[in-house]
Length: 169
View (cartoon, rainbow, N blue to C red):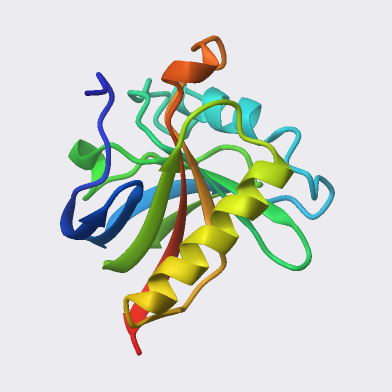
């Protein structure tokens, strides 16, 4: 298991690489910048935030996963806020960073290894969508890419997931 904190969830259903999870709510610090639609500065901005570039000048522990969401217009990237800060999250100095609540709910997920890229992500989204429909659920959000590893982790040991918020059909 990871040495980093992750959001809490219960597994409702599991089949092979698929899961339906019930997440409890948690907070993220999200990078969104209309001048950077491909989020090229996302990870660096978020890393500076946890390295003490916040109003409290506090170093914050790294968590996993790093969550990316793509809308029609742009992409967003977020770090999960450690649970110990739930009641007092250090405010970002960077205006492109915002504290957001990730609401509890059911999520379909599919896990895969290797390096993630657009063709692989699209394939996983299609597989996940087919599976959740077969299980009687409907998609309720954009797909999210959840990345769990540092850049230098070898491909065969990497953990990536695609998540989507779902409801019973």
